[in-house]
Image 1 (tube, rainbow, N blue to C red):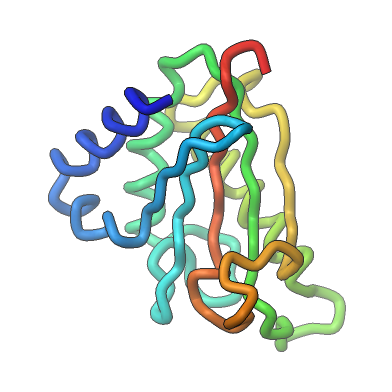
Image 2 (spheres, rainbow, N blue to C red):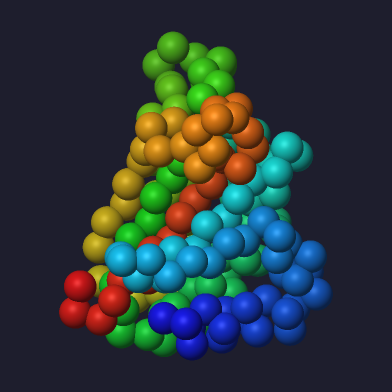
Length: 154
């Protein structure tokens, strides 16, 4: 997993438009595999605020990740997370729907860009239940999509 992390970091450095996003992408080797987190900023780096459709920067990053991860045998799981601010535009649509819709949007885009149809085994939406910064529940970095590259055979 460390080699994959280095390979993805090198791919980001080769593309100037992705290199500028490096502070918004965190990769960590965990017990599940390599966790790639696309962290939002206050202005919405990967998704527009309250929207499940990726921005141009989000599309570029996901296309690069899909082209690299699609070559691997590993299974993937995709998670969507929000901050603790309530979704304001509708009582019918909440952070639960937004987090799930973002994760599923990432799945669709990545499968169109190189990830095999059978490679994604789970799409999860967590809303604000797994905050990255529990001491700052409204922090932009709580709004994120995580792609977990599972260990082979997992």
